[in-house]
Image (cartoon, rainbow, N blue to C red; front, side, top):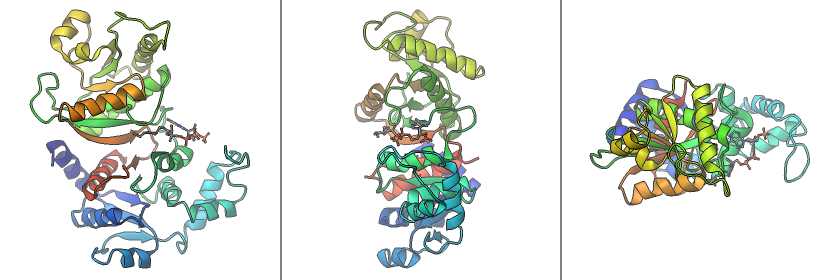
Length: 344
Ligand SMILES: CC(C)(COP(=O)(O)OP(=O)(O)OC[C@H]1O[C@@H](n2cnc3c(N)ncnc32)[C@H](O)[C@@H]1OP(=O)(O)O)[C@@H](O)C(=O)NCCC(=O)NCCS
């Protein structure tokens, strides 16, 4: 286990947060619930039918795990009312009809959609965080959160970041850890969204990675050295995003736009942006779009040997995280610990 992950796990076990795992039908999730409970990383609430969970996982010790069955739980009607109220007046894009015309419709829907059920438990304050996605797509995992949990005060954009852990000493990453964003959610963020991504990623750097953030807004240009005015206008977009982030979070150490080498190499930073506190010294990296971000983190992972922890969702009013469908029991445990750290 990397030192960063060890620190995350240790901090999580001191918090004893209640994390809901709505995918009680997935054996990896049930096994992870057992280990999280045994290792006292968090209290786990599983959603599903207790008899079925037991039958499908005969070797798992379910002692200490809270199991909630939407069919019999007396809070189901309360959650249906919360959903109905939260989505009143919203039109389903596919059918062009109201999403939940009545409370009964909302109830019937959450009896089938356990991710939404978990999101409603979170909204009601009955759990502290949600981890799902072992057998659901990113869109289906995040949509309930986007629809009912919404963004934290002052944040307009839900985004994601990866904590990148260095495999060895690296002069360009003396912290041994970096944060890359957004590599997984926002496809072509505008300047306002990029500013939100910068601020949320700095928060992730502090609370999860345990580093003091110095945020670089990345580009193929450094401080106006290049332009793409005839194409995507991404250089002025990153310049505008930097300005907005500085205005929205005056205490944040953020600067740009920077090429990656100007952001991390002191000699290049000094040459190209001598007055910047971030140039040559950055540890949080905001990419101009999902293409750059996703390709960038995979280069660091495959060529550089970095461990990529994430994607970690950021900006929700209450923490929700998405698993990859290929996740292992260990991956689920790590994401539960990260989610516990995000819970206020
Ligand atoms: C995140 C994502 C799943 C949302 O898609 P969606 O469910 O179709 O979203 P919609 O456009 O229907 O929006 C649903 C709600 O969420 C809100 N929303 C969507 N994206 C949001 C964001 N990034 N931040 C804040 N709110 C957001 C919308 O405003 C809408 O709110 P409303 O219904 O209350 O009016 C979509 O952006 C996506 O698919 N991103 C790429 C994910 C991916 O493939 N990643 C690759 C994995 S590596």
